[in-house]
Each structure stands twice: as C-alpha cells, then as structure tokens.
Image (cartoon, rainbow, N blue to C red; front, side):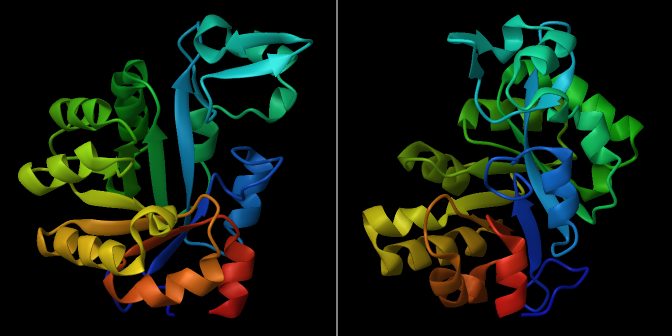
Length: 236
C-alpha cells in the first residue's frame, strides 16, 4: 500500500481512529502519536455548556460515582471532573496539528455551525471531512455548507438508502464490523455500489481484525480509519 496525497485506489490515506483507540483515545497525545504513522486523524466533536467545541466520543462520562453530560458542564469543569482531565482537547487544538487530512465526526447538531466557522477560520476547510453517524446531522451539515465535504457513517439501513438516493454527499463511512452481520461478499458489493455513485469510501473499524480484512477490501477503498495506524503501517 502506498500512502500519498491523492485519495484514490493507488494512494490510500490512513487516518488514526480517535488517534489511537484505547485509554488515551481522542486526546492530543493519541493524535500526535497517530500522526507519526498516518496521514491524518479522525475525531469526535461535541459542545460544552459554555459553547466550547471539544473532542469526546460519548455524550456523557462518569466521575465520582456520578454521570455528567458534556453539554451540561463548562470546559473548565469538564477538565476538572473528567478522568482524563486536561487531556480533553478543544477542537481548535486538534486543527492546529500538522495533519494532511482531518475527519471531524459531528456528534450533535449544536456543533455544526461553530465547527464549520472554526474550520474556516483555521483555513482547514480543504483538508477536513465532516461526517456523522446520524443522517439528520449529515443533512444539516450539507445544508449549512453545501461546498464542504460531507460524509455519512453507515450504522443500519437508513444511511445506505440516503446515500443511494441523495445527492451532494462526499463520502460513505463504512464499518468493517458489518462483515459480522451481513458477511464479506455483501459488504464488498455494497462498497462497490456506493463507489459507483461517486462516493469516496472511508473504511473504519470498531472491533474487527484490520490486518486480516483491510487487504481484502482495499481495491474499493479511499481512506482507512485505523484503530492502530502504527501496526497497520508496519504491515503494509
């Protein structure tokens, strides 16, 4: 596999999934480590009570026997209460990293407008993909910024239907884990079908064996969002 500067079959990009999946995922140390091996990073975006864009996957976290929602605490309180403390980064800090490609996974509608404005201010619009695992959020992203690169993560049947019948979306974010539910051949067929519709294919992983499955899917993939870009880079 060749890592290059074009997203096509000959030059496949590697992104670190939340930097590196694990205890420090979605933190600056994880992102910096990923960028030693990958072209870019994938990260999750949420909004705090005081309107700060932060990187965090889940809508809530546990601390001191209590559960706190990201949207109900300020940034300072989040960093005080959260088990990872000050390692929780602002999106602006992530966008300052030296990456060729960013994939911002937008977790809530309230993050859309400030995120797009921030990316524009950082002059990173040309190297940022906005995606969501909720079709409604992807549609709002597309409405807010028709010229942005907007992707849809496939979690269930509805995203597939929307990707096949809608226009304007840039990429389909396909989980390798779908193999466990529908099998390898149906997934490979789906990927080829989406690709024929002009969509870029972003392959991401939750719990599957990347080193076994990725080589089998590479011919139809543009970007690999890897849980362990160091291991993937060594093998390829």
